[in-house]
Length: 299
Image (spheres, rainbow, N blue to C red):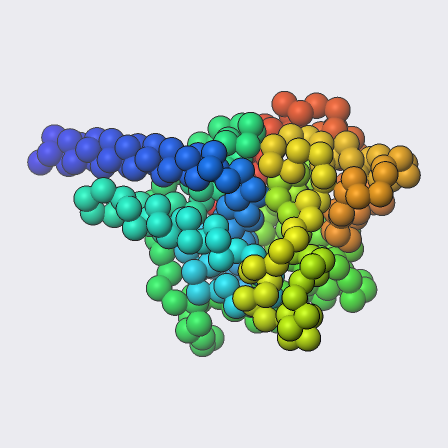
């Protein structure tokens, strides 16, 4: 009996390994066809893993595939395309579906980083999918866009009230948000290096009917997307940190970066800026710290 159990366990490990390699290869193929999706695939994985809406129970939620039911959230605008890629890969698994949707999403984020010349991030498998994020109730494990009660900070900008981080949080708000998820300052500064990849939705060249009524479809099909850092926005590197420091020293040119307030927080707060300097000076260190932080986020 023990031998049979051991053989079955070994076979499961082999199947998971094959399925994992298949997902990574499929993601890399998609990114080779369209390099701009790397950043959005990484963002999709973050948004699936970071949602834990019960303030007193930050371990409830996380990487569970609930992103499929949360696209209408304003924070998830622009994620329709990467979600379709992940869904297609999930649906195309050979034989029975060995990996959960959450596993495929977490792997897709890691593979996107690797395909964009970043580090290879090993991902543990075995996540369970949630069936519907819209079910509610005090005893439910389902997540909502808002926290069940806000995490009160010293100011309005340091108060956390949403499951995903608001772009308007100040540095204390970032500490409050990521701290409740178990991340140190160094870890969340490393995670925010994900902004080296990807682009913002902008209103530039938006059709007049969309400007009058900015629907989710308008946001998903925005004609102009602007990168956080304009230099190589489809390559994963430590340029994000270098550009933040140049922004702080007022050395960047117009159009070189389009940071949001939470990006700027990292250099106007001395306690966080020291990590920006470390990562700007040592890309290998950034890759190592980002890999560990990403693993912690999705596991």
